[in-house]
Length: 242
Image 1 (cartoon, helix red, strand yellow):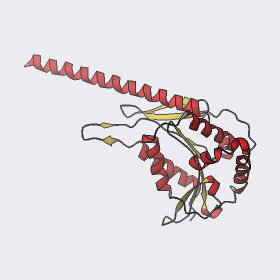
Image 2 (image 1 turned 90 degrees about the vertical axis):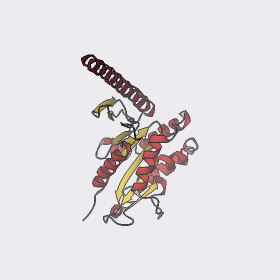
Image 3 (image 1 turned 90 degrees about the horizontal axis):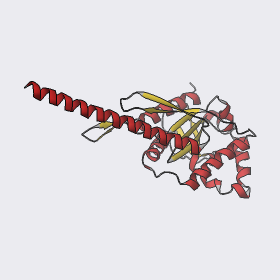
Image 4 (image 1 turned 180 degrees about the vertical axis):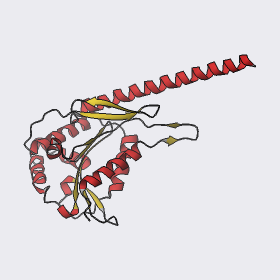
């Protein structure tokens, strides 16, 4: 039975959510991790053709992912790869070849959940037989970078932005705004959303993530302050009753 890429993408996003949303336990208290990654499912949207299936953006990580079944290996992506390679040969884009290898990935999966079920390669290597890494390793790497890697420098962020624009350009599509949503977890565990005007605008998205983190942190601090005041009142009431 075929395992289609939309099923794999759904499980990938769920696994990524499990990892990125895991709680830390230091033996004293549990706390939700900060919402430091915007996850955009683009499959079967206008951006699917323009960019790819999934776009991940955060202050310390950017990743553009294309998922394909091994049964459909390469044939759907060959034309796109040729166009990207042609643009990267131009002098003004040559510096972006390294950026491509760092943020643009081809995820190929089989129909049998055994050894070799998945392989992840830099998009520019999709026509090779390199075994790459497995999908689980990609998830671990993305979560590790989102949690603890240094924030992207201004130069790196600009290069990522230019590369996303290059991918759009090779498809001959105009660069129109593509709104999206950020999702986070409040201090009390409730889900919260925040709008983004254009998910391909890294600067705006990163600023929105940072503002959102500050907003949630303030709410958590306010709740903690209220809890402390409530405990003081309860303690004083208890002493007065004795």
